Image (cartoon, rainbow, N blue to C red; front, side):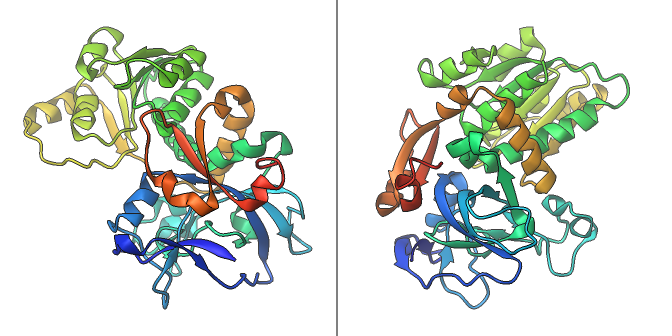
Length: 357
């Protein structure tokens, strides 16, 4: 079978490799990937910035945003041949911390977790994949190809779960949400804010085009100015920062309504900023703000993501997938075009079955 592989740390090593077909264990599903989402993490691994192969292997099979069809399943499995599934990414560490032991492996405290296609485990970017039954999330046939959005949606499902919990403290009363960034993560964050009945604002640099149209399609407001300017009159009491741009991270923490909740979902690339830490501290303390980071997801969040996608306008969701790349040309998916939102790699099984079921 063919698989997308790389030697972590070596940008010149990424290739489409020939590998033996996988042998499923007694509790494993054998699945054929249909669509594979591509994100910044994949680009960073190919660029040699991080990534870790399984013990004893030099190469890592890439891919962690999976939509697949089940080819074979254990008799006792909840999913059967022909079912569509998404694959959970993280696995708890072998000597579990308190969080991993309780099923909250997305909150792992000792760092010994593994992740499919990222850290210590092969990913889903192959023509055949084995998937542990307990880490497979079944999807309704009606969701079809939109199931490829499950993994990024699970990240936002977790973020919103935490926001909802924090908003329940004291007097609560959070009604206006600002999302910074209108990429796939930002748009899914805005979707889930709109589904909660919040007044949603989305800030991005694109002056016109599909991003603006998609935000309007949610009944949200689109803006291209600064965080400070927007917060002056909108006074958002929830901010979901989805860019990882260091200045926007600071702005999100500094310019918001009293008692605000700020969720950081991006990893800042430029860390060299000069700002008044004391003033920022005073803003957070004196206004009882909450600032927290959120990454990864466990099974509960994948199930919440499934519900959010099922309840969304499917035509709106389809517009998020702006580019499809065949497996033979998978490296083209790493190049991010100006109008791209979500790029997916289309596996041969999808092409032969009508684009992802």
